Length: 107
Image (cartoon, rainbow, N blue to C red; front, side, top):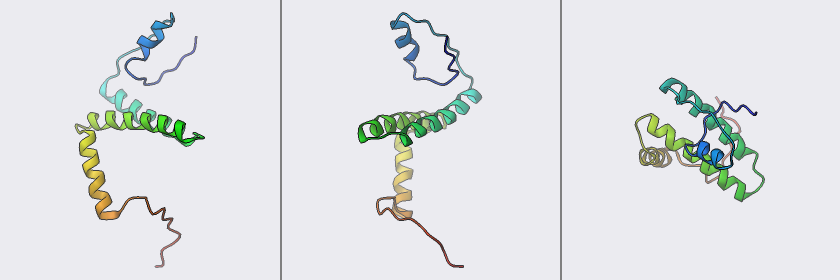
C-alpha cells in the first residue's frame, strides 16, 4: 500500500473511496497545517517548473493559486487582499513584463 503523508485537496479521500480503494487521513493542527501548506507550495511550484507545454502549465498554476488562497486564509487574509498588495507593489516597483535581467550594479 503506497504511503503519501502529504496535504491533499479536501475531496481526494472521497475520490479515492469512489474507486473502491480505502484511504486513511488525519486532521492537522494549525502548526502542522501551515508546515504542510508551505511544503505543498514547493511541490506544486516544482510541478509547474517541470511542465512542457502551456496546457500543463495552466493546470499547475491553478494548483499554485489554490495553495495561495489557502495560505491567504491561514494568515487571516483573502486573495483580494493579496491582489491589492500585488498591484501596489507593481505600481511602486513594476512587474516582470519587461523581462529584465539584472546583471550587476556598480558600487
